[in-house]
Image (cartoon, rainbow, N blue to C red; front, side, top):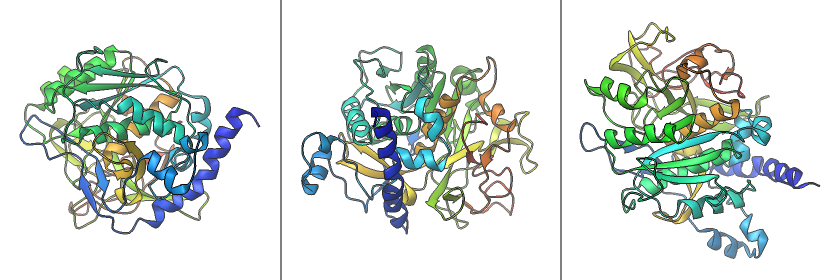
Length: 414
């Protein structure tokens, strides 16, 4: 058996075991926010939710408890810590594209503060799941400051929780597009000005696909941020919709970005093998953001009649921490842990775009999705709050606010 065959076989063997671990634990998980809420207008918070009922452990602890040593210890994955690469690729019909796609593409993740363990933790994650190596020395992984320079990096994340966000981002790119190059761009602070500067730096560094797993409140002046930082026609700028249920956050509200909502993803006995609903509850609370922007104009490619302005969202992917993903972080966490939030869905979607390759020059990335409405898994059930019975908070056949056009069914729509 060739190396690549062993690589695929290992992934396929894990589809069931890890999927059962995530699905079996999907009943009312206890969670906490990785980052604190944005303190004032013009600032952002990350959208990562950590499961507190899944005890974290380092790779060394995991293998010691299992009695595994040597090279086998490097390739041991945790069971019951959420979905891994094979699960996500299976759920979204990406296995064939991920096998060889994305080799020429750079995916950038924009976050705040520095994670000094990012490269080391990325290596552990990828070795454990049998993914190709991605290191700084090979040029596959790059860490930059908000001005696009390798030095000096910003202050360490400390107790802010942003290091967990960074681990989630880079691990999701690894899971969905294992051959993509990864650029982690670290802003000096959580201000939208610093984070926006980092977006510009990501594009300048050659990333055609940029994920932003953060957001804050809308404001009357946000259109100036659109122009300054998020308007990059011909590039994909994805943004998370938020984790507090029905309601709009920025920059997801910008017509210049691909607004990414969240779903609950479980295994199922149907031809797809998976089932999805809107992440959230009709009573509100924790769940994907969505809704009608208070300030942004409606882009020409959105036609839903329930809002005369920009509607969140355009597309979605798994975000429910009850059906979360496995990540590895040793800076402010204890190694393997299970997380959710729309901070997971945004880098997933950016990576699906990368598998499909660059979009046409001058094109608004979200508009490409609306040209192919049949190439999605339609999410038709669930809600993330109360919105007067409209599509803005309810899963419906076709387009709806919480999940947009749906979730990826391969790369055709991207």
